[in-house]
Amino acid sequence: AFSVLYLVVLGVFRFHDGIDRATLVQACAIVALLIVAFSVLFVSRLNLRFSDPSLTAWQLLASVFTMLYIAYRAPDTRLAFVAFAFVAFMFAMLRHSGVTLAVLASVSLLAFAVMIGVRYATGQAARVIEADLLLLVVMAVTLPWFLLIGSRVQRLQRGFREVHVRLEDIEEQARRDDLTGLYNRRALLVAMEESKRRADASGEPLSICVIDLDLFKRY
Image (cartoon, rainbow, N blue to C red; front, top):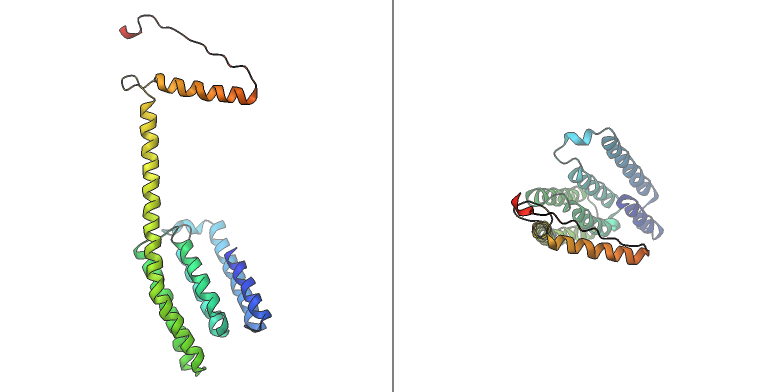
């Protein structure tokens, strides 16, 4: 979906003469090739040989390099690159954090700088290079903060999950007798209330069977 949406945006740029037809065709070909390549890796289970079977980092770098190539061929699409780069890093934050994200961000910014250097070496328009440098500075300033906030959110989510698991454990312990491990009176009352609600909702009869064990404490 990410790749298709990017191509749709490029189509909008093409409609407004922001990208030439040949570059758009190349973008479609590259995206299709990458989709096939990653699909083959997943179907053949070769992805399981990597430390991250989801290949999130490799997919992010592939998307960044592709968008930078398109931005080099069609400078007007650099805005799309910046927007989609941040979206790509949002997906990466679901799988990675800390050092890995910092390395990915550094590689992406370095690749952007290399693209600007190539543009300068080939004698392209100064205004285009200046716009690229401005975007590079903006990304270099905002991307670390973006990743920092994302890592904080990840830690909060992990903390919430841990608290939720602990609460479930406490609730389960409160429903069982410490000595026998059997469900206690509280658990029985909760079960009866749930059964009563289901019976009322379905209109089915509800029966309760009580068994009294004499001299139970002796055993």
